[in-house]
Image (cartoon, rainbow, N blue to C red; front, side):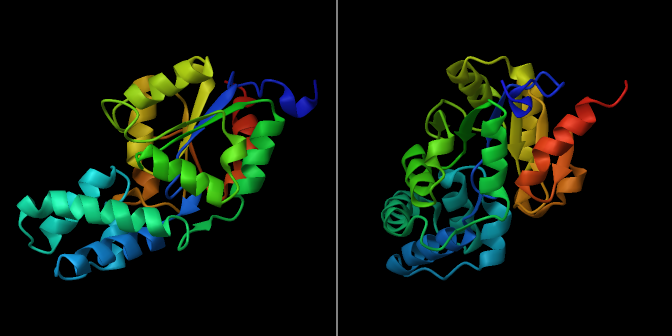
Length: 233
């Protein structure tokens, strides 16, 4: 076994990686799909800044918050949901970009021998389509979307179920995300958690979130996790 494949000293043997705001900047996709949906309903457009601060808690939450923000009747939710789904399916991945260092970081984690899962609050079919479109699907043994379980992050259930699917203990499974949703879920599940500095985090500073570390690029994480694990207690 190569040195990279050895246990890093923290006991971590797997990673669960968030998608939107962590691996891929998808605000462009949300912008296009949401505003196409609003146009179909003859409703005012929503600006990108609001979208950036609102994504991360699932499509249902996003659509309800958008309708509320523009003063639309909440009874229009069903039509909005159907329209949004159709538009998002059509443009998924076309207006999004992989963040710098993501592919390299995933390669490094895979070379350690870690099992990798993607866990997102995005609907599972959209998550798998996006990973395929960006050439990232092959890194992951498991992909779970926000519709896979009865509850979404920040509830710990999705993390615990994903650990079960990977056959790893939560204490040995690193959560990598961009927001308090990921950190709160990880803490409740008993997983260590590192965050990226560039994500969405509902418009709040990620430095204020309770986590084990923050990186500016995903390919910095393997070295920093190892370095911290090897520090004297």
